Length: 331
Ligand code: TYM
Image 1: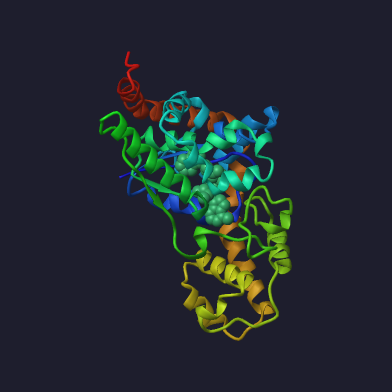
Image 2 (image 1 turned 120 degrees about the vertical axis):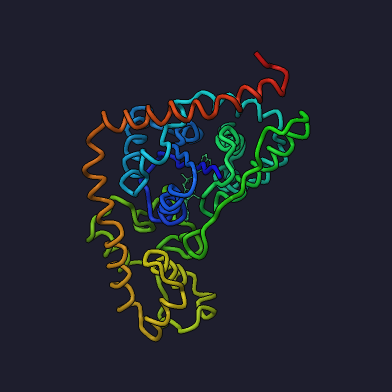
Protein backbone atom coordinates (compact mmCIF):
# COMPACT_ATOMS: atom_id res chain seq x y z
CA UNK A 1 0.00 0.00 0.00
CA UNK A 2 1.42 3.35 -1.07
CA UNK A 3 -0.45 6.55 -0.23
CA UNK A 4 -0.06 9.78 -2.19
CA UNK A 5 -2.03 13.01 -1.82
CA UNK A 6 -1.57 16.74 -2.22
CA UNK A 7 -3.05 20.09 -1.32
CA UNK A 8 -2.79 23.40 -3.11
CA UNK A 9 -0.87 25.94 -1.07
CA UNK A 10 -3.32 28.71 -1.90
CA UNK A 11 -5.45 30.27 0.83
CA UNK A 12 -5.75 28.98 4.35
CA UNK A 13 -6.34 25.42 5.33
CA UNK A 14 -10.01 25.01 6.31
CA UNK A 15 -12.25 22.53 8.04
CA UNK A 16 -13.19 20.84 4.75
CA UNK A 17 -9.53 20.14 3.97
CA UNK A 18 -8.96 18.87 7.50
CA UNK A 19 -11.94 16.51 7.74
CA UNK A 20 -11.96 15.47 4.07
CA UNK A 21 -8.23 14.89 3.72
CA UNK A 22 -5.57 15.91 6.25
CA UNK A 23 -6.82 14.18 9.41
CA UNK A 24 -7.33 11.03 7.33
CA UNK A 25 -3.76 11.33 6.01
CA UNK A 26 -2.59 11.54 9.62
CA UNK A 27 -4.33 8.27 10.44
CA UNK A 28 -2.79 6.48 7.43
CA UNK A 29 0.79 7.32 8.36
CA UNK A 30 1.21 4.23 10.53
CA UNK A 31 -0.31 1.85 8.00
CA UNK A 32 1.48 2.68 4.77
CA UNK A 33 4.31 4.53 3.14
CA UNK A 34 2.85 8.00 2.62
CA UNK A 35 3.87 10.88 0.38
CA UNK A 36 2.16 14.23 0.92
CA UNK A 37 2.95 17.34 -1.06
CA UNK A 38 2.19 21.01 -1.54
CA UNK A 39 0.83 21.26 -5.08
CA UNK A 40 2.50 24.53 -6.02
CA UNK A 41 2.65 23.70 -9.75
CA UNK A 42 -1.11 23.28 -9.66
CA UNK A 43 -1.43 26.72 -8.08
CA UNK A 44 -0.03 28.25 -11.30
CA UNK A 45 -3.24 27.41 -13.15
CA UNK A 46 -5.01 30.31 -11.46
CA UNK A 47 -3.71 33.82 -10.79
CA UNK A 48 -0.84 33.61 -8.35
CA UNK A 49 1.12 36.24 -6.54
CA UNK A 50 4.75 35.29 -7.20
CA UNK A 51 5.87 37.12 -4.08
CA UNK A 52 3.47 35.10 -1.95
CA UNK A 53 3.85 31.56 -3.27
CA UNK A 54 6.99 30.46 -1.38
CA UNK A 55 5.50 31.85 1.83
CA UNK A 56 2.21 30.03 1.22
CA UNK A 57 4.06 26.76 0.65
CA UNK A 58 5.85 27.03 4.01
CA UNK A 59 2.67 28.11 5.77
CA UNK A 60 0.77 25.12 4.38
CA UNK A 61 3.65 22.77 5.26
CA UNK A 62 3.57 24.11 8.83
CA UNK A 63 -0.22 23.65 8.91
CA UNK A 64 0.11 20.00 7.82
CA UNK A 65 2.75 19.27 10.45
CA UNK A 66 0.68 21.05 13.11
CA UNK A 67 -2.28 18.86 12.11
CA UNK A 68 -0.26 15.72 12.73
CA UNK A 69 1.69 14.94 9.57
CA UNK A 70 4.99 13.64 10.93
CA UNK A 71 7.95 14.21 8.58
CA UNK A 72 9.74 11.33 10.29
CA UNK A 73 6.98 8.95 9.15
CA UNK A 74 5.73 10.54 5.93
CA UNK A 75 7.50 12.12 3.01
CA UNK A 76 6.48 15.79 2.89
CA UNK A 77 7.63 17.92 -0.03
CA UNK A 78 6.78 20.65 -2.50
CA UNK A 79 5.77 19.46 -5.94
CA UNK A 80 7.89 21.96 -7.88
CA UNK A 81 11.06 20.67 -6.19
CA UNK A 82 10.75 17.52 -8.31
CA UNK A 83 10.83 18.15 -12.09
CA UNK A 84 9.62 14.58 -12.70
CA UNK A 85 6.03 15.68 -11.94
CA UNK A 86 6.01 18.12 -14.87
CA UNK A 87 7.95 15.72 -17.11
CA UNK A 88 5.59 12.82 -16.55
CA UNK A 89 2.60 15.16 -16.93
CA UNK A 90 3.84 16.07 -20.40
CA UNK A 91 4.24 12.42 -21.39
CA UNK A 92 0.70 11.69 -20.14
CA UNK A 93 -0.74 14.55 -22.19
CA UNK A 94 -0.22 12.27 -25.16
CA UNK A 95 -2.46 9.67 -23.49
CA UNK A 96 -5.25 11.77 -21.97
CA UNK A 97 -8.13 12.63 -24.33
CA UNK A 98 -9.75 16.04 -24.77
CA UNK A 99 -13.16 14.45 -24.23
CA UNK A 100 -12.10 13.05 -20.85
CA UNK A 101 -10.86 16.41 -19.63
CA UNK A 102 -13.92 18.18 -21.03
CA UNK A 103 -16.07 16.10 -18.70
CA UNK A 104 -14.27 17.19 -15.53
CA UNK A 105 -16.76 19.04 -13.34
CA UNK A 106 -13.99 21.03 -11.63
CA UNK A 107 -12.89 22.38 -15.02
CA UNK A 108 -16.47 23.26 -15.89
CA UNK A 109 -17.03 24.96 -12.51
CA UNK A 110 -13.76 26.87 -12.45
CA UNK A 111 -13.73 27.98 -16.09
CA UNK A 112 -17.43 28.83 -15.91
CA UNK A 113 -18.76 30.54 -19.01
CA UNK A 114 -15.38 31.98 -19.94
CA UNK A 115 -13.71 28.83 -21.31
CA UNK A 116 -11.90 30.81 -24.01
CA UNK A 117 -10.31 32.98 -21.36
CA UNK A 118 -9.33 30.17 -18.96
CA UNK A 119 -5.69 29.10 -18.82
CA UNK A 120 -4.69 25.94 -20.70
CA UNK A 121 -3.23 24.77 -17.39
CA UNK A 122 -6.65 24.85 -15.77
CA UNK A 123 -7.84 22.45 -18.48
CA UNK A 124 -4.89 20.05 -18.31
CA UNK A 125 -4.65 20.31 -14.52
CA UNK A 126 -5.98 16.74 -13.97
CA UNK A 127 -3.18 15.33 -16.14
CA UNK A 128 -0.60 16.85 -13.82
CA UNK A 129 -2.58 15.38 -10.93
CA UNK A 130 -2.43 11.98 -12.63
CA UNK A 131 1.35 12.37 -12.95
CA UNK A 132 1.60 13.20 -9.22
CA UNK A 133 -0.09 9.94 -8.39
CA UNK A 134 1.31 7.58 -11.04
CA UNK A 135 4.91 8.74 -10.55
CA UNK A 136 4.94 7.10 -7.13
CA UNK A 137 2.86 4.01 -7.99
CA UNK A 138 0.24 5.09 -5.43
CA UNK A 139 -2.36 2.48 -4.58
CA UNK A 140 -4.52 4.76 -2.41
CA UNK A 141 -5.25 8.45 -2.81
CA UNK A 142 -7.07 9.89 0.23
CA UNK A 143 -9.09 12.90 -0.94
CA UNK A 144 -12.44 14.61 -0.45
CA UNK A 145 -15.39 13.76 -2.70
CA UNK A 146 -14.63 16.73 -5.00
CA UNK A 147 -11.43 15.04 -6.20
CA UNK A 148 -12.98 11.64 -6.94
CA UNK A 149 -13.43 12.35 -10.64
CA UNK A 150 -9.76 13.30 -10.99
CA UNK A 151 -8.66 10.01 -9.42
CA UNK A 152 -10.96 8.07 -11.74
CA UNK A 153 -9.42 9.94 -14.66
CA UNK A 154 -5.99 8.95 -13.33
CA UNK A 155 -7.09 5.31 -13.49
CA UNK A 156 -8.24 5.76 -17.08
CA UNK A 157 -4.93 7.38 -18.05
CA UNK A 158 -2.93 4.61 -16.33
CA UNK A 159 -4.90 1.85 -18.05
CA UNK A 160 -4.74 3.48 -21.50
CA UNK A 161 -1.01 4.13 -21.22
CA UNK A 162 -0.32 0.53 -20.17
CA UNK A 163 -2.46 -0.75 -23.06
CA UNK A 164 -1.17 1.65 -25.73
CA UNK A 165 2.48 0.96 -24.96
CA UNK A 166 2.00 -2.66 -23.96
CA UNK A 167 3.61 -2.25 -20.56
CA UNK A 168 2.59 -2.92 -16.98
CA UNK A 169 4.00 0.33 -15.72
CA UNK A 170 1.31 2.32 -13.98
CA UNK A 171 -0.79 1.15 -11.05
CA UNK A 172 -4.41 2.33 -11.44
CA UNK A 173 -5.04 3.98 -8.04
CA UNK A 174 -8.12 3.83 -5.83
CA UNK A 175 -9.78 7.04 -4.67
CA UNK A 176 -9.97 6.73 -0.90
CA UNK A 177 -12.83 8.87 0.30
CA UNK A 178 -14.09 9.20 3.87
CA UNK A 179 -17.65 8.48 4.93
CA UNK A 180 -20.44 10.89 5.77
CA UNK A 181 -20.05 14.63 5.96
CA UNK A 182 -16.25 14.50 6.10
CA UNK A 183 -16.18 13.58 2.41
CA UNK A 184 -17.90 16.83 1.51
CA UNK A 185 -18.07 19.54 4.15
CA UNK A 186 -20.47 22.23 3.00
CA UNK A 187 -20.37 26.02 3.30
CA UNK A 188 -21.72 27.49 6.54
CA UNK A 189 -23.71 29.99 4.48
CA UNK A 190 -25.19 27.63 1.88
CA UNK A 191 -25.79 23.93 2.47
CA UNK A 192 -25.74 23.39 -1.31
CA UNK A 193 -22.18 24.66 -1.85
CA UNK A 194 -18.91 23.05 -0.84
CA UNK A 195 -16.77 24.72 1.83
CA UNK A 196 -13.87 26.13 -0.16
CA UNK A 197 -10.83 28.39 0.04
CA UNK A 198 -12.12 30.47 -2.83
CA UNK A 199 -15.58 31.33 -1.48
CA UNK A 200 -15.55 35.15 -1.24
CA UNK A 201 -17.27 35.01 2.16
CA UNK A 202 -14.91 34.12 4.99
CA UNK A 203 -18.01 33.37 7.10
CA UNK A 204 -18.64 30.36 4.85
CA UNK A 205 -15.71 28.41 6.26
CA UNK A 206 -13.78 27.68 9.46
CA UNK A 207 -10.08 28.30 8.88
CA UNK A 208 -7.34 26.64 10.84
CA UNK A 209 -6.10 30.07 11.87
CA UNK A 210 -9.46 31.33 13.20
CA UNK A 211 -9.31 32.05 16.93
CA UNK A 212 -11.86 30.65 19.40
CA UNK A 213 -14.09 33.72 19.25
CA UNK A 214 -14.12 33.69 15.47
CA UNK A 215 -15.04 29.98 15.41
CA UNK A 216 -17.89 30.60 17.87
CA UNK A 217 -19.08 33.59 15.86
CA UNK A 218 -19.04 31.72 12.55
CA UNK A 219 -21.03 28.85 14.03
CA UNK A 220 -23.48 31.25 15.69
CA UNK A 221 -24.08 32.93 12.35
CA UNK A 222 -24.12 29.71 10.31
CA UNK A 223 -27.28 29.39 8.24
CA UNK A 224 -29.88 27.00 9.69
CA UNK A 225 -33.62 26.44 9.57
CA UNK A 226 -36.20 27.09 12.31
CA UNK A 227 -36.96 23.42 13.09
CA UNK A 228 -35.48 21.57 16.08
CA UNK A 229 -33.18 18.64 15.35
CA UNK A 230 -34.97 15.37 14.54
CA UNK A 231 -34.29 11.99 16.15
CA UNK A 232 -33.96 10.17 12.82
CA UNK A 233 -31.14 10.85 10.29
CA UNK A 234 -33.61 10.33 7.42
CA UNK A 235 -35.44 13.47 8.59
CA UNK A 236 -32.33 15.58 7.89
CA UNK A 237 -32.89 15.09 4.16
CA UNK A 238 -34.12 18.33 2.62
CA UNK A 239 -32.41 20.27 5.43
CA UNK A 240 -28.91 20.68 3.96
CA UNK A 241 -27.60 23.18 6.51
CA UNK A 242 -28.81 21.15 9.49
CA UNK A 243 -27.42 17.98 7.93
CA UNK A 244 -24.04 19.62 7.39
CA UNK A 245 -23.73 20.93 10.95
CA UNK A 246 -24.77 17.61 12.48
CA UNK A 247 -22.31 15.85 10.17
CA UNK A 248 -19.49 18.20 11.14
CA UNK A 249 -20.21 17.59 14.83
CA UNK A 250 -20.06 13.83 14.24
CA UNK A 251 -16.89 14.02 12.15
CA UNK A 252 -15.16 16.12 14.81
CA UNK A 253 -16.21 14.06 17.83
CA UNK A 254 -16.06 10.67 16.11
CA UNK A 255 -19.77 10.03 16.74
CA UNK A 256 -22.21 8.70 14.16
CA UNK A 257 -25.08 10.91 12.97
CA UNK A 258 -27.42 8.63 14.97
CA UNK A 259 -25.41 9.24 18.13
CA UNK A 260 -25.37 13.00 17.58
CA UNK A 261 -29.13 13.06 17.04
CA UNK A 262 -29.76 10.84 20.04
CA UNK A 263 -28.06 13.54 22.09
CA UNK A 264 -29.63 16.61 20.48
CA UNK A 265 -33.05 15.41 19.25
CA UNK A 266 -35.83 17.95 19.78
CA UNK A 267 -33.34 20.66 20.69
CA UNK A 268 -33.07 23.85 18.66
CA UNK A 269 -29.89 25.28 17.17
CA UNK A 270 -29.70 27.61 20.19
CA UNK A 271 -28.38 24.69 22.22
CA UNK A 272 -26.74 22.68 19.42
CA UNK A 273 -24.57 25.48 18.03
CA UNK A 274 -22.65 26.22 21.27
CA UNK A 275 -21.89 22.49 21.61
CA UNK A 276 -20.65 22.39 18.01
CA UNK A 277 -18.47 25.47 18.54
CA UNK A 278 -17.01 23.87 21.66
CA UNK A 279 -16.18 20.65 19.80
CA UNK A 280 -14.52 22.59 16.97
CA UNK A 281 -12.48 24.68 19.37
CA UNK A 282 -11.30 21.54 21.17
CA UNK A 283 -10.13 20.12 17.83
CA UNK A 284 -8.54 23.25 16.39
CA UNK A 285 -7.01 25.04 19.35
CA UNK A 286 -4.08 22.63 19.87
CA UNK A 287 -3.40 22.51 16.11
CA UNK A 288 -3.39 26.30 15.98
CA UNK A 289 -0.96 26.65 18.86
CA UNK A 290 1.44 24.12 17.26
CA UNK A 291 1.15 26.08 14.01
CA UNK A 292 2.08 29.28 15.86
CA UNK A 293 5.28 27.64 17.07
CA UNK A 294 6.20 26.04 13.75
CA UNK A 295 5.50 28.75 11.21
CA UNK A 296 8.30 31.08 12.27
CA UNK A 297 11.03 28.42 11.94
CA UNK A 298 11.43 28.78 8.19
CA UNK A 299 14.89 27.16 8.19
CA UNK A 300 13.49 24.00 9.78
CA UNK A 301 10.52 23.94 7.39
CA UNK A 302 12.86 24.31 4.41
CA UNK A 303 15.03 21.51 5.78
CA UNK A 304 12.01 19.20 6.16
CA UNK A 305 10.80 19.98 2.62
CA UNK A 306 14.27 19.49 1.11
CA UNK A 307 14.68 16.16 2.89
CA UNK A 308 11.21 15.08 1.69
CA UNK A 309 12.01 16.13 -1.89
CA UNK A 310 15.21 14.08 -1.92
CA UNK A 311 13.36 10.97 -0.73
CA UNK A 312 10.40 11.45 -3.09
CA UNK A 313 12.68 12.11 -6.03
CA UNK A 314 14.48 8.81 -5.51
CA UNK A 315 11.15 6.95 -5.32
CA UNK A 316 9.80 8.53 -8.51
CA UNK A 317 12.90 8.32 -10.71
CA UNK A 318 12.56 4.67 -11.86
CA UNK A 319 8.93 5.21 -12.95
CA UNK A 320 9.81 8.30 -14.94
CA UNK A 321 12.71 6.46 -16.62
CA UNK A 322 10.38 3.58 -17.52
CA UNK A 323 7.82 6.01 -18.93
CA UNK A 324 10.47 7.60 -21.17
CA UNK A 325 11.51 4.14 -22.34
CA UNK A 326 7.92 3.04 -22.96
CA UNK A 327 7.25 5.96 -25.32
CA UNK A 328 10.55 5.51 -27.13
CA UNK A 329 12.53 8.29 -25.50
CA UNK A 330 14.65 6.00 -23.31
CA UNK A 331 18.10 7.28 -22.49
P1 TYM B 1 -7.39 21.07 -2.64
O1 TYM B 1 -6.15 21.84 -2.34
O2 TYM B 1 -8.55 21.82 -3.21
O3 TYM B 1 -7.90 20.34 -1.35
C1 TYM B 1 -7.08 19.48 -0.56
C2 TYM B 1 -7.89 18.30 -0.06
O4 TYM B 1 -9.01 18.76 0.71
C3 TYM B 1 -10.20 18.15 0.20
N1 TYM B 1 -11.33 19.09 0.36
C4 TYM B 1 -12.49 18.80 0.96
N2 TYM B 1 -12.94 17.67 1.54
C5 TYM B 1 -14.18 17.70 2.10
N3 TYM B 1 -14.97 18.80 2.08
C6 TYM B 1 -14.58 19.96 1.49
N4 TYM B 1 -15.36 21.02 1.49
C7 TYM B 1 -13.28 19.98 0.90
N5 TYM B 1 -12.55 20.94 0.25
C8 TYM B 1 -11.37 20.38 -0.08
C9 TYM B 1 -9.90 17.88 -1.26
O5 TYM B 1 -10.75 16.87 -1.77
C10 TYM B 1 -8.46 17.45 -1.20
O6 TYM B 1 -8.35 16.08 -0.86
N6 TYM B 1 -6.29 18.83 -6.99
C11 TYM B 1 -6.10 18.76 -5.53
C12 TYM B 1 -4.64 18.74 -5.11
C13 TYM B 1 -3.84 17.67 -5.76
C14 TYM B 1 -3.89 16.27 -5.48
C15 TYM B 1 -2.91 15.68 -6.34
C16 TYM B 1 -4.64 15.49 -4.62
C17 TYM B 1 -2.90 17.87 -6.72
N7 TYM B 1 -2.34 16.66 -7.06
C18 TYM B 1 -2.69 14.29 -6.33
C19 TYM B 1 -4.42 14.10 -4.61
C20 TYM B 1 -3.45 13.52 -5.46
C21 TYM B 1 -6.74 19.99 -4.92
O7 TYM B 1 -6.87 21.03 -5.53
O8 TYM B 1 -7.03 19.85 -3.59
